[in-house]
Image (cartoon, rainbow, N blue to C red; front, side):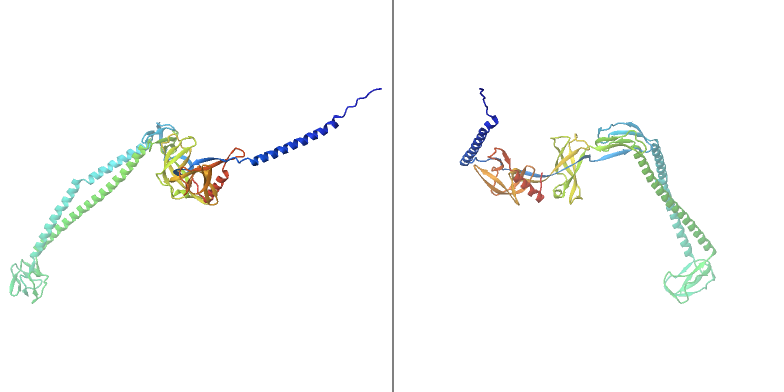
Length: 489
């Protein structure tokens, strides 16, 4: 008889034990959680820990910052004269030159010939002026005219005396009684008229003419009564008249000559002046054949092969400037001469100095706001090259002796701002008024805050042991500041 040994199926044998284990494990976990909760509720809370900063007193500045391109303050481009050619180049591209330094010598025979012609013309006109305007010639002409004028006066006086010889005048006042008639021939000394009975004789032999009075007429002393003419007297008068006319004609000719000489001299003098200008222009043109630096700077362009009015070279001044836009909200506080800080991307960590050179009187409007171009002169920055970008920081406002706190210490709620002051194990909020702020700090005014107080900037959470910055408070603060439109750097 065989004996058969039967073994139980493992799948049906292990299942009751696993279920027991699972129930026991869950029960232990639940009991452990209950014990932890009860223990934590009964334990005292862990005190919070903070990061804080001291309130200090100092100055805070607002700056206007913008980026622009470094350019020369002045440039000068030299072009080739059309008929010139390069004779000698004495500079190279990128060379630093001083004012007046010779850079290029040019040659132009046409300009040299024009200058020589202008000089010869000037000398000719100057010689003509010297002759026409000589003092001896003018004095001689004036002397001739004066001499003829004297002779004319003598002749006129002689004529007057001769003409007076044939006049019969009243020796005294009285009544006239004529003794002769017009056309009657009389002899010298013959009584021809009486005045109040006083006889008057003929001054010379001749014919009575031009009786000017009537019998019985009363006359004053010296009144011409009539004239007596004779052939001899008429010839003398005619001769004197001819002499006077001749003298007057000579005088008129000399005066016309004098006036013509003055006009000729004035014309020659005008031609001299024009010739001087033409010669000076020719000299300048020839002088430009020697190209010199108009100011200290750098040769930024050079083309020795230039011809036919092409660009020969360009000099850029050593003084460098950068023009940046400043918002209209800050432009009223920017004035020429104010110090400026400049940084360049090519020189990280370095700060260059400068000053405001000019402020544009007219702004540029775009997208609802205006900016004003401000030109800044860079000082002592020989390493900075033209065309580099630079950031300009202009201090537009400074609050001196203000209470300063980190931005992380500010809590903003609506229009109110406060800081949390910690003293020992207690803390309390203090309202503050923001005067100015930059990227890291704010200048504030507060009644219950003094320099040396400590304000909370961050909280060390108790549950996780991690540092929790007050990001929410700073976000609300910056949102309010952006809404007010007031920013500083």
